[in-house]
Image (tube, rainbow, N blue to C red; front, top):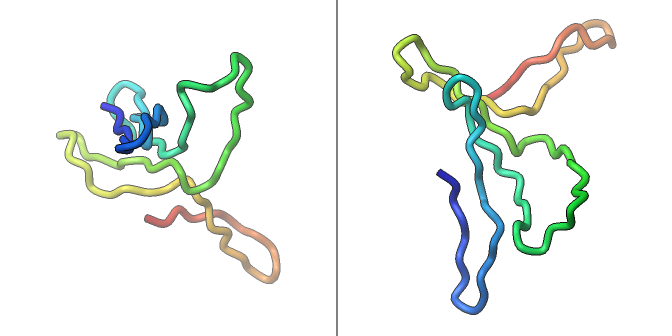
Length: 86
């Protein structure tokens, strides 16, 4: 289900969040896209922090939600690996 924001003066055809699916629901995308005045060729832009992924157990219960922002972990001035923070 997408959520949309409505104004009293004019309609806003921009969904505020969309679901991300794989074999089941994986999370949500909060990137705002204008559905009414979009051009046929729409360049996809990536903005960190607008996607949230749900980690669930075998029963389908969501245990935690993480974002798509990667935080580098440094050791002696070099990046060893990245961590995801919720």
